[in-house]
Image 1 (spheres, helix red, strand yellow):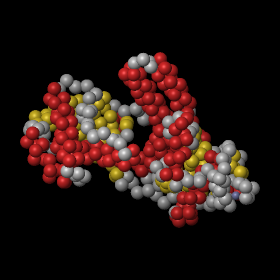
Image 2 (cartoon, protein in one colour):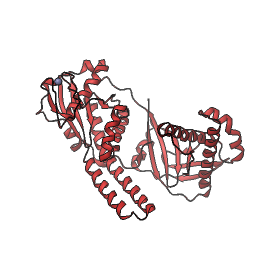
Image 3 (cartoon, helix red, strand yellow):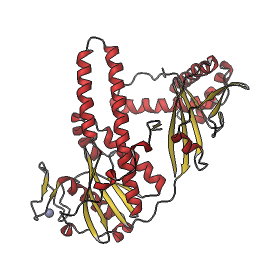
Image 4 (cartoon, helix red, strand yellow):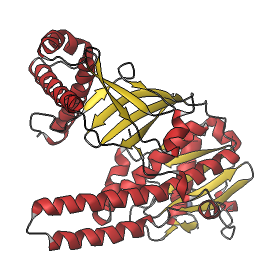
Length: 406
Ligand SMILES: [Zn+2]
């Protein structure tokens, strides 16, 4: 399996020929979209057969940009079809943003100096200097990371790097966590039994609340000018996300290291499944559920790089099931889960984590052999080992905001 990262470089240029390539590329994409729509083409090969000749004659750009444009066009169309299916409504897709996507055989990058050459047409090209931070260098100086595609948009360049992920180890234990608004909660399990665990998300909920109030105030103050309001709100949103992301990096890094030290698997809910949707919808009404998805995303790519196995389970009923006797409560569960059939009682979030573990054990034999699932022996007074992860963990400077999702 491959792991991808996107390295973002803020950059300004004074190169009219590069601006020209960006606008040509947008034309290529939009013309490709029209052809693909008209002839109902969904594969790159068929789109190439239908459109390459015409586009190649009509546009003087570097030829390898044409297949890249096909790929972007097909991605835009795929999103369009998905929207149509879901909401039955989507206007005919059209790319407004200026952009250029170059595959790694098109551009040349000196990984040591950051000198970048982007072809324009024929043998003509533009030279740019990427501003390399220490963080960027840590990827570029490591030959294990290969270069992927390069995306140029006004104001920034995004470089995808990728490497092969190591094979995940055989787990000797498990960390099963339920994803909540301000913490991940559950159990750490090994062949010696289970301990309750709670991993705070570093005050993410408070950050969200602060920004939520700020946005509401801004919206009220700038209600007269929707354009200004939107710009300010977008800026607020970016700030909030980068602050939250920063906190979550600490948490996910600590968790993955902790799992690796104990050769444990990490078990999480699959938030993309139907069962999770109703729940995240409820969360949505209060605060955005983006941090929950973001922490999962971070855990997933960090575990992939570290060779830590991850198991995703269906989150349905996890907060309403008794892990001891299996009985379900159909009514609302309070802060403490109380089973009506046996006398089991447990904090509802820890309880959900136990059910997540139980579900994973049922479908994973290796894990079931490695872990003893004994809810009765759970000691409530044992301090969770995960509490210390953040406090004693790596420093906040490790992951700057120049890293973005691909
Ligand atoms: Zn029970």
